[in-house]
Length: 90
Image (cartoon, rainbow, N blue to C red; front, top):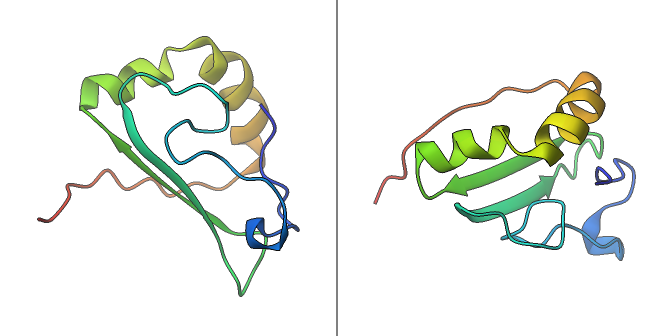
C-alpha cells in the first residue's frame, strides 16, 4: 500500500484510490464508499470519506493484516487525524 503523494493532485494525472476499495485494488468487505479529497488550498491536506456497512465492518477493517502491518505502523505516524464517526442525514 502506497499513500497518496501529497504534492500531486489526482486530477492532474496521478492515479488515486478506487472509491470502493481503499488504497488497494481489491474491495474490502463492508466498505461501501472510500473517497479521497485533496485540498486545493494546501496539497498536503487530505480528507478521507469512508462509509462502512456497519460499525462491525469498520471494526473488522482495523483487525485486517493490511491495517495492522502497513497502515497503523507506517501511515498513521506520519499524519494528523481528526476522526469523526457520523451518521448519514437522509
